[in-house]
Amino acid sequence: MGIQSKAAREKFSRLRQSLLQLVNEVKGLVEPFFSDWPVVKGSVYELKRKCGKPGCKCAQGKLHARMVVSASERGKTRLRAVPRGFLVDTQQRVRRYQELRRARARVVEIHRQMLKVMDEMEAMRREELPRRGKDRNGSGDLRAK
Image (cartoon, rainbow, N blue to C red; front, side, top):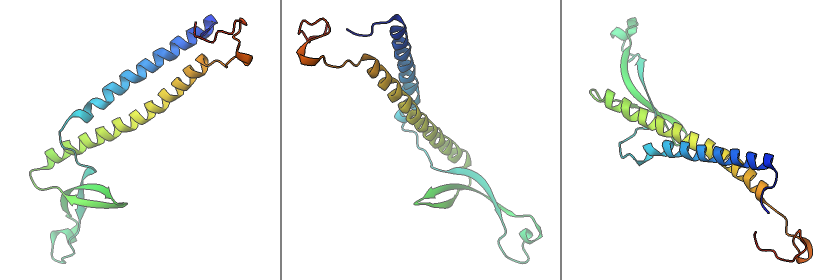
């Protein structure tokens, strides 16, 4: 029989449109995953510290500075020094990694929304089988009309 009331058909149409919008958003989000550009996990920042030598300039407050990448490995935060001359390249790689992670998180969120919409659409279309092998008209024909 399908969806009967006008209000239900309009709601179903809105759900279909929502699903299409979500699908289109996912298409845009997965595009960066097809790239083969390298990525680096972590965050880049400047680390300032004292070396511990009593006569060093850092003992008077002018700390040693080094650019590092901070990333979690097996549950622990690890720092890796960025080689001189590779800062811009490393920052770009880290930025690409962070963009991929944000896109992935959004895809997961959209996937949940899509399942919710799909479940609602399915519920609107679902019919119970008639009892004793007869349809609503009493003809006994169970084929889709």
